[in-house]
Image (tube, rainbow, N blue to C red; front, top):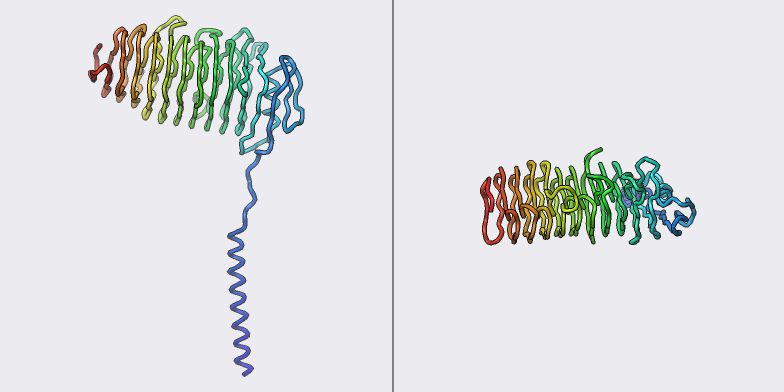
Amino acid sequence: MLFVGLNLFVGCESDSLETNEEIAVQNEKEIIKPSTAKGGNLSGEVTGSTGAYVAKVNGVTKYTGSDYVAAIQAAINNLTSGRDTKEWVTVRVSGASGSTGGALKYVNMASYTGLDFANNTFNANSGDALVIPVWADRKTNIEVKNLKVSGKPRYGIWFKGCTVMNISNITMNIGVPQSGLGLGIRVDNSTAATSNLTISGTINITGGDNSVETYGVDGFSIGNVTSSNNAACGVLLNQSKNGTVGTVTGTNNSTTGSTTGYATFRCANNNGPNVVCAKVYSRGSGRGFFSVTGSNGCTVNTVDIANTAIQGILLQDASNTKVLAGTVSNGHPNVQHVNSTSCSTKVNGQTYTAVNGSW
């Protein structure tokens, strides 16, 4: 009896140990690991009045002074260092760049930073071509919204070598500080590979050079863009692929400078493939839609183009480029293909597919 009892006792102990081990393993699986995210707890703001700006982060003053750019920069610089979660600075006052001192002057974005201008205006009033209201180089997860720009900036917004970029609700009324400058929004790969760009909301740019320009962007979503009275394009895509553009509405594009050869919507420099534009609406511009220099794989769903200085639509050295529907009137000519392969333009009830021809 004692032998049997010992067996029973040992057996019970073994079952109990196995159960405890199972529970320990299960508990290990269910442990909630602490978050490794850094940042997300600080926010900055810029307030004050003309010539007397105050920058604070979580209510703590980081800058007081007369320099609008320095105030915004101080707020950005005092957010969480090395963060991997986006933190925001809200600019609650309009201001001007002031003198550049002969060097580029800009607000330098940091990674994981959002900048909300709350519909205030940055005036580029330096008198030279060296002001860039918002600039970023090789950054990720950056966002700018609700910004107005006036004066004569080099670029209104310039992102280069960046990834995961969001730009929304931008209004500009700008001039050209010198030929070839005065762009509204430019995103390029001049310093590193560039990808994942979103431009959305109200984008309305008057004056300047190109209103929106990309170069070397892989993956983009550009919403509706309104562009008027400028020296170059409404939207210009260079060497950019895998993206969409909404409706480009252009009035008097490429009419204020020395050339009328640009267009409301232009693809150039081996742009494409896999690019779709919903609509081109153009009035009184140099051209309506222009694809050139080896660009390929672009589809424009519909066009409404009238009163261009030269061609309404020009496909030159382009391939696999299509206009699916719409109207063109009072062009010179309405449509022209020059050395364009596997292209088709379907407008005014006609479909044009010839490699070379004018209609």
